Every structure is written in C-alpha cells, then in structure tokens.
Image (cartoon, rainbow, N blue to C red; front, side):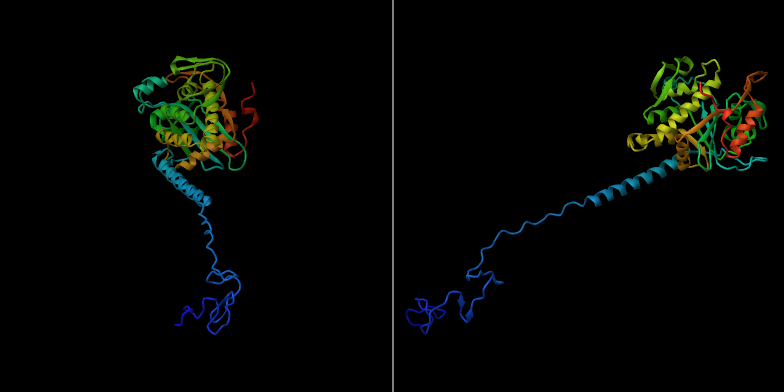
Length: 374
C-alpha cells in the first residue's frame, strides 16, 4: 500500500482514494442513516451512550389472595372443630316410644334438665361449688322450652320439681322422683303425660358443667333486687347489678332461701338461663375465639343430649332463647303436704291446661298466665 494511505481507502487528509473528500456522516458504500439505528447511533453518526436501565418493578404480594387463603384455613378449622365437638357430645336414649305417646305438634319442644349428680366432680370442685356429697341423681331444674314454627318469641316454662304428678309404673309422686327412678327416659315420659306435649329434644347439664359454661362466656350480668345469702348454696350476693361467675351463678339458680322457696327459685332459673343464652349467642362471644372455643368445649364436657340431637340443634335452641323468650311457671293451685311425699306442688289444672293447650297449638300463651310486672 502506498505511503499516506490507511486501510479502508482513506488518506490522512480525509480523502478517499481518488481524491474525493470524505463527507461527515457517510460510511463506505453509502450515506449513514439519520436518526437512531438498531445499532445505537445518533443522528450525528456517533453511538448512543448507554442510559440507566429501567427499574425492575417488584411484584407486590396479592393481599386478596392472602386473605382468601386465611379465610379458607379458618373455615376448614371451624368446620373441623364443629364436627369434633358434635361427635364428643354425650348422648343418651332419652326419647323413647311408648303406648299413647302424644302426637307431633307444630313448633319444637325441648326438655331442659339440671341434674344434681356429683359423680363427675372432684372433692375440690364440690367444695368450690358448695354441692355437698349427696349420692344418686335428682333434678333441681325442669324446664319446657317451646320454639314456635313461625315468628314470635319462644316460651320457657318452669316445672316446679315438687310438682305432684303421675309417674308411670310408680304411682303419684314429686316429678323429680321420676328422674331418680328411671333417669331421662322416665322423666320425659312423665312430663309428656302431665302436659300432653310431645318432647322433640332433650338436654341435661350437671353442676360443674353449668358453672363451666358461665365461666367460659366470661360471666353473666344479673341485677339482684335484694341481698341473697344461702350458706347451703354457697351464696352471698349484695343488691345491685353485677357479674356472676360460675360458682355464684350456680348458687343463684340453686338457692331456695326465699319465702316462696321453689317458686322463686324457678323464676330465678328462667331469668338467668335467658341472660346466659343471650350472652352465649352475642357477637362479642362468638367473634372472640378465647370465649367461643372454651364455650364449645365446656358444652362438650358437661351437656348430655338425646341420641338423635346434634350441635346445630343446641345452637338453634340457644339462639331461640337469646332472641327473646316469654317465661312462665306452670300455674300452681296449692302446696299441701302429702304422706310419703312431703310438701308438694299441686297444679291449677284448669290454667295448666290453658297453658299447655296454647303451646300444643303453637299459639301465644294467654297474657293473664304470664308473670305480671311487680
């Protein structure tokens, strides 16, 4: 190659071989294209400087998906817990078929029984709850709950435990003797025979279970109209509105230290049971796992139901009472003393038939039979 020429055919002076000047922006073989090229050139022919890389956006967590997963997990746990508690309920054959049993009627009828059996209590629990050491099984509480088929309040009827009635196969005696003679089946048969109402569901609860349920919901508020002292029931309450714990609540519903004895007690029992149901079905209890779960397990350990009853039946019963309930005691005609039975409660048969006749027809209880405001 001649001196003064470089590779590519240009002289040092910027002329192509042949004497033609080199024009800016042109390549060998033709003009350079204007504007940015795929190779990264600017309009003046120089390569563009590499700019900063665009920031890579990080994918944000999908909150909706996380919430959905949490809800599914909670639902699965809740359903599993529900079935576990349902399978753990104590079941007994309380409802049996027998000759001349009352026919089905509109609405739903529960027999609610409070047993004073102490077999499941430890010595410490007996002392704490002031239950004593009596053996066997009796019932201090017998209630009939009627839930109407349509709208309207449920009706909670107290059956005094000393009610003098016919007990199949055992003559006439106090109604709670039926429980001692033949347990739940004989008690159900006795109640059905005395009232003419067919029982659809059965629930029984003992001393310890009742106190445990009250403690599980965090206590129940009650307004005490006058001081209540009853050493036999371990009760010492002052006047005023206050929160009762399990032991206090048990004493409140057991105490007979009143001028009217059992008649005042059944009124206190209805009042407290309605307040307990309202507290147990409230949003504050159901939405709080520290109350809802202990309540479920307390029910499992302490409640006995009929062999065909399930947890959803109990829930329906509690909501029916928590949503408003009319309370009444079977009308009483007298409290005579009967040889071999002691002081008993005789029903006012005419008004008792009016009461149970209304429930049998799924009608409202006559207003004159309901407790009158004091």
